[in-house]
Length: 237
Image 1 (cartoon, one colour):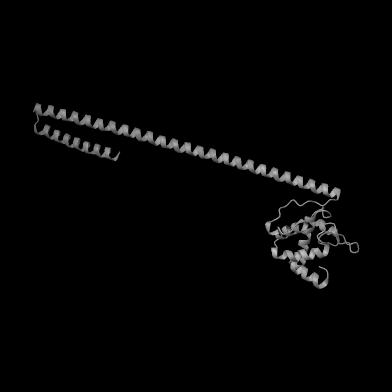
Image 2: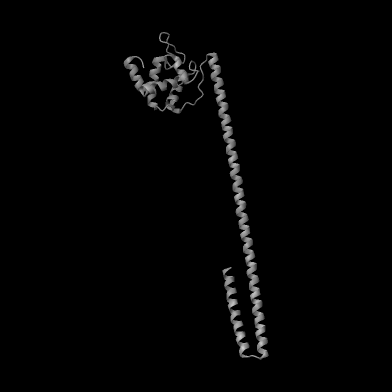
């Protein structure tokens, strides 16, 4: 485009000089018919040249406008496609969240059903959580206790103390009961109904009893090993 405009400028300048030359020739050779015809012919050529260049500029401008319109359409199409993709991704994420909530609610209902049935039947409520590999050396209520102890923020080095403490108190028996004092469950809560602050299934759910016992130990002795040390020196904790 710049080259074309430069060429047009050169031609326009040439035509201008030609016009001045013709005008001068007409003035100096006033009345000479041959010179007049020659000047007229040169003016016609110059006019045709300018007209040709103007047409070329117009065509180039039209092509540039067409290219600009095509680029604008492409940008709009890309923007529309991006908007549709974003909307689809948002819809998929919303659907996934809804399905996740449904699954969580379903698991909660299933767990509540299991707990209710166990409470009615008097059977021990099964543990539905996961047991980490660091607690793999233990089984039964000990494995549950190890898992919940780690979730409560205690280090794995504290579990041997907790194991000794509650083995002494109840042998990790969910239904262990002291007829003389009324202490109940794995941590021997006195009275056992204190554990209802965790859940109403405190009589049959080892996880409920362990959670309460860990809260009691943390609030009174800070760590299971401190509780075990106190139990060794006094006979109780």
